[in-house]
Amino acid sequence: QKEVEQNSGPLSVPEGAIASLNCTYSDRGSQSFFWYRQYSGKSPELIMFIYSNGDKEDGRFTAQLNKASQYVSLLIRDSQPSDSATYLCAVTPGGTYKYIFGTGTRLKVLA
Amino acid sequence: DVKVTQSSRYLVKRTGEKVFLECVQDMDHENMFWYRQDPGLGLRLIYFSYDVKMKEKGDIPEGYSVSREKKERFSLILESASTNQTSMYLCASSLRGEQFFGPGTRLTVL
View 1 (tube, rainbow over the protein chains, first blue to last red):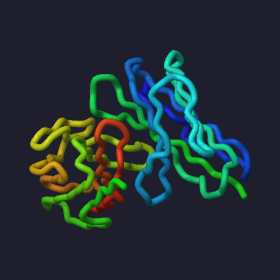
View 2: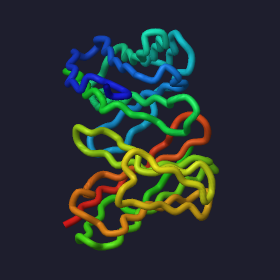
View 3: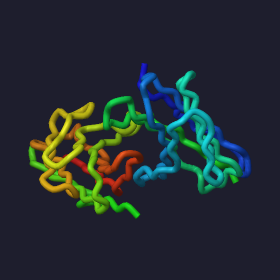
View 4: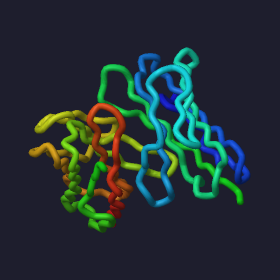
């Protein structure tokens, strides 16, 4: 079992819809959870981080964390074609500086 | 804003050459990381450093070494480049939380 799993996609949504991206992780001691966006040929850029169970909202983005079920999700409201990118989930296992990345979900927002 | 810079955007080397990739961050971050990214495999950690002269192996350290003589600079060294080291190399830094990435170096080994 991979430590951080994401559906590779592509996930296609129409412009203006809500895009829902999911990530599961295997280490129950994981403490911090991050979502990065990566455009083709570019490096990842941080969108959001979440440490506690529940929801965290930032503009059109909402991160959701459920530690009991070991999943973290990212919702993008009012999706725009400029949101088309690969979204990487990253987790920090307890007691380490390391980050474990998923392989990413490719999102396509159709105009 | 945090700025992480890498010495080259594109690099072409020959098999057997010694290759140096340099990374500099300007935010006094303690932690620095080197990853490689390959299609279908995602980001894989090569080495990381949590302080000057301190380093730890990541998931795929074979064929690589690192150097951190100053806090702001973290170098990745390919001792003898091989074709299977052709990849995108990404450097990142962090203090306690989120990582910030440099623009990446696309290395081709012929």
